[in-house]
Image (cartoon, rainbow, N blue to C red; front, side, top):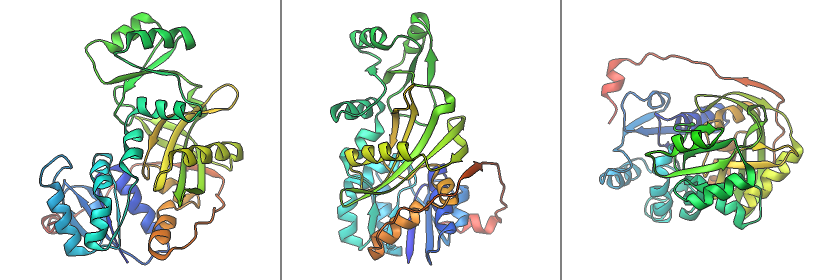
Length: 327
């Protein structure tokens, strides 16, 4: 089989390629990215350059690439491309005989906006951090009256903790909001030692597998992951997946409050940067999804290997002729 992975310069895209390489799939991997110096391009069997997702030429280039390579599946490896692929999924599948693993635009929109994430969980009666739009002064005052300080101020659309601050009083809140738009103010739930990342796989309306890992963060990314069964949290994460109804993978990031209830502060309607870590633990969600899409192989909840996953830097050398060969 042949699989196209976009975003070969992103942690997500590279994680998908790593999971494919860890799998038992007999596949040819085609990688694509705007930057010819993206390391993921050189882990693949074929490499292509793409325009950025907001470039008017992006769609035409994707069509050219799909027509040339005819991949069996397309796995989206960066957030900025999700909306385009979500809108175009059915058309691409019909034109090029491929499977595009992406959720529908409704799910992508909910996951893309942290305030909409909270509103979604409120609408379906599931726990979430109490939240208000940064520009909604009455809403922020009601939030302070409800949960007090500390509060978290963050961009509604963003990743890797960029622009996130924890404020402990009104002066800190005013400073965090000053001169900035597109923010959400949220209840600060739990502590850093009760933060988790979880994944569900949803097909045919049902959660078919899930995994929960506790994590330590550095610069907004998971750099230590603690693997265990976490049966109660898995049950609650499956409830979240059933409510959201993604197509395939969804990643939920949450902290637990004093009574152990998970309050999700971020959804990724896709694989996540911790996808290769989960594969190391015995939960290779990329392989399970590909087998489901291409061979209708039922997804069976795999057992996970308890332990700790440690991330570290690595290096690679790329000869100049390989860089010059990227089309």
